[in-house]
Length: 171
Image (tube, rainbow, N blue to C red; front, side, top):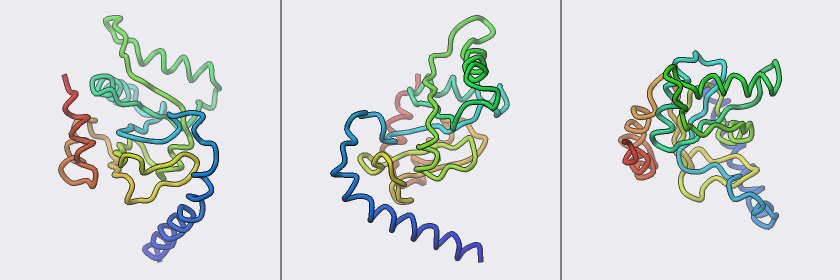
């Protein structure tokens, strides 16, 4: 039953993608060139253990990869900003220069349900405002380093060149 449900979900995503593609290509979606999910993205949550999240931030800074969270904390936007501020400052008062953004649309577009998740997206494959095909990206979920996730995706994924290119930025 579970397998049938997953197959149905995949078929529906493909049907939705095929139906929306011609319409969205005609729509004016060029207002924000960064609205499309692309390259390598780390999906995370501020409810993750702070040490794990801080390590991901250090690694994402090293590789120039954005960290995306789904939304604000239940306590509101000021609490979310405070949580991020507490993470970007290290014990020795150095600032972690990691990019972090809120984008629930990318979570939905790539079907991300658990974090941390590491996605590598085929160039030009995922258009804004519509689901991505499963064949358009690789995703690895689990409590691993960004380096290990990218090494695994470079070795076993469908977009190894993007994963390897980002790994080559390692200092």
